[in-house]
Amino acid sequence: MIVLVTIVYAPSLGGDFVFDDRLLILDNEIIPLPPWDLPSLLGPTAGARIAYRPLRTLSYMIDYQMGGGFHPFVFHLSNLAYHAATVLAVHALARAAIGSAIGAFFAAALFAVHPLGTEAVAYVSGRRDLLCALFAVLALRAFWWLLDRRAGRGHTAGPLAATLLSGLAALAAKETALVLPVLAALLAVVHARRNPAAGGRASYGALLRAAFVITAAALFLYPDRFVLAWHRAWVGPLAPQPALSLEVVGKYLWLALWPATLVADYRYGAFALPTASFDGSAALAAVGLAVWIAAGAVLLARGHVAGAGLLWFLVALLPVAQLVPYAEIIAEHNAYLPLVGLCLAAGEGVGVVASRSRLALAVAAVLVVALGARSFLRSADWRDEISLWTATLEAAPGSLRAHYNLGIALGRAGRVVEAEQALARAVAADPRDVESLVALAETRGRRGDYAGAARTARRAIRVSPNAPAYAVLGWSSVGLGKPFAARRAFRKALAIDGTNADAIRGLKSVRDTLRPRARVRSGEDRPTRRR
Picture 1 (cartoon, one colour):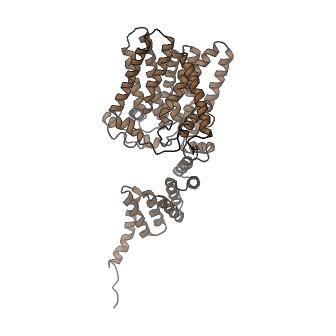
Picture 2 (cartoon, one colour):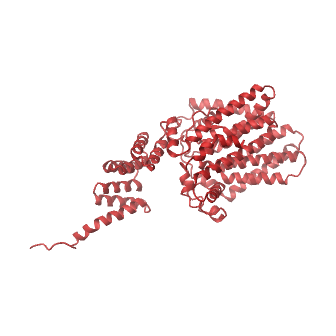
Picture 3 (cartoon, helix red, strand yellow):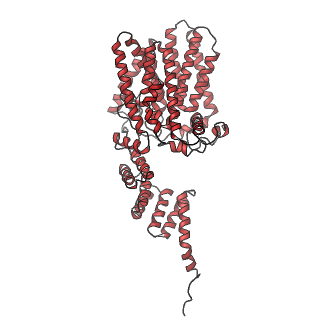
């Protein structure tokens, strides 16, 4: 399993920091601190700018200390190690729940190479999903152990402690681990069906109630962390319900079954939002989900792990199914934990069929190789910003964020002309996007087109007066030789945001330029006029 993971994700080891890695790692003042600095890690300012996920932050702090700085290789290597550990945990859970060595191996191998998990592994910021899934699977494996001990009337203290501690660790990595009690309930049903005389429903109900109590306690202790920090990401209604949630879940399901086209962005221009509360796409998704749920319920009622796995996939998606809207419409890394359920279902299926036909093993092996090749190629897309957003635009040419981020990446690489073209396409995709307009104005100013930069900055101001646009307008006016206009623009920028560094620096520069003129106007160094 470790060799398989290493081969498939080898391209990611040479990757750089991309996308949100700058905010979460490079610009995060907590990361360079020692990992044992718990007050800083757990303190009230730890989640001020980013979601409060202390276990993820702790893992980054450890990587920083191990590498002696921000070395991308160390961070990517850790991602690969966490993924390998999760694969082994999936194998352990599958071996216990499925009972078939072949089925367990295939379930873990499928999870190891599935392309939908590539974003979580190849993207350093995907660490949250890796750690959450790792400890969630460990918690469920301990829970299965607990059920076995309960059925055999053995001591349950050790399995119970392992279940609760792993569950809390998963919650500390990502708040979507709140679905753990429901996943445990699905496995408890399977175990109860296989062991009908193992203590009755009351014992399993008690265990599940304990899991809910622990989750509720975590929410009570950290309401401003796990709940409110996540709530900050929520936005107003994105599209009519229930069409939005149906199409979002349907898209995740399609990507899991057919991961041919993967992109790093499913926002504006890359994912078509529904305009009615129920349309053709929503109806198709509803039919597919109904069939999926029915199959899962029937298999679960018969005590099959496949039924629990099919329902696991949907349950684990509920926190990100846009039932409560938030800006990230779809993100492939969100499917990392749900994939475990799908792989368990597939593993049991292969285990049953393989016992009757060797052809099934050959087909399963071919499937693993094909999916591994797709993940190998996909992980290479994440090696740097330019390759990532270029690949995104090849799959989703209308992605506003991809055009914008590609322009920013090209600008950082010194490819200013190409950056201007990419940002112009972003503006064409949404003429009222202020960030794109400001970035385009800045790029035109870097290229020396001060008049064009000023026009673009004014467009951004007309859409929404903002400090960055006024700062760009000020520097453009400096380039055009208009110091008084520049001073007015810089002052307006500081009136909106008194901490804007560009405006502060620009205003100082303009004052230094105008100071000699002020001395002349006040009479200093002025020749005596004749009467």
